[in-house]
Length: 332
Image (cartoon, rainbow, N blue to C red; front, side, top):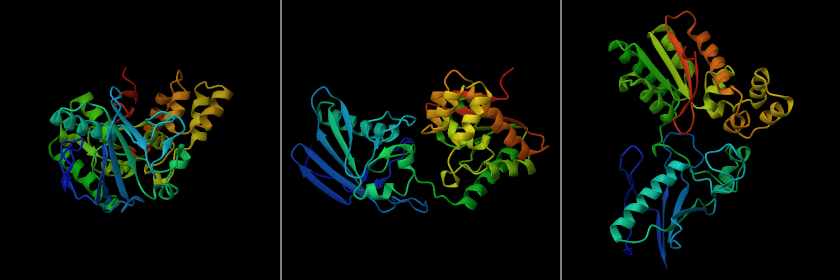
């Protein structure tokens, strides 16, 4: 629109923060522009640390709105069970929303139409993707553009667990009778809205459910809700207390056995055993109370860690849209 690239460029994140990023390269083309940044993953063990992330924005065909495409090094979804249908570039919903909002601002500022074509590329991304779970998930040809906050949280186990402990300490000091430990932002927002909990009652548990439960066993609170998505809570149901993907994926064979125990026939059981993702397994088991069975098993795992601590425990399973799909114990 102007022929000028602001550098650094400010980006509005989903939480409202506006960090500035230095541009690593810029290029002006007929009816299009490109800019790129180098990803800094901080202390996170991320294979994309130092990768070039490039966006090309072109004026789109009138009436088509905003379209997204996978350039070099960005994968394409080929299997069900992910937030995007097969055939779509592996650019997740929150990054798409961020880009769409930024383009809407440009359209309003310059009085242009709302039609844009966005291509994201990551040079060398196909090779990097071989070090990720993308192939197993059916994402072919490159990396995924992920994220819900736009912020990298350093993956330091001791520091994170210490922050959980401090959160419990604060809640106890405030005499809060109900705290919630969530695996991520979506589940945290859902449980806060469900119960109207204050921020001080929310524990950013992440993958460290074991560390959370063990500390609360020694420092009890009257009521504890553990909330997470289907995959994380399924891992807890299978007896895992560290829910990070590096510690292993969901055992779909065990998930299939859970389904068989609640009425799945042999065909459905086999399909679930071969599911692409936990979400895919849940979709296949539609009509069976699989989520409720998982919540009950997760409750048993967590209760065993709490032992006889005077804590009323509850497990919630929250889907990607923030909807409650199972709880244990169920409401009477």
